Image (cartoon, rainbow, N blue to C red):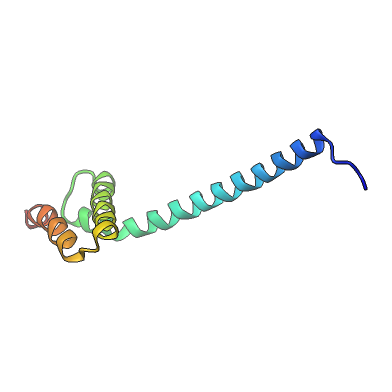
Length: 95
């Protein structure tokens, strides 16, 4: 039976780590592309409303939505998260 030496183990470990990093980088890229596509209608709506910086504002709106979804995951209270999100956004959108 052939012996597996330390350099071979180290090389294998490095190869696995490179594969994991590449997979993680690909996942991050695809996730970012998906996220960017989700923001398009928000950016368009904010542009129509005359918001000076629709890209930044869309990220802030997205952060609020993300926080609301975390609250639902934590306590299961969709109605409460929706009401709080609406309370923050509605005055802004009404102008």
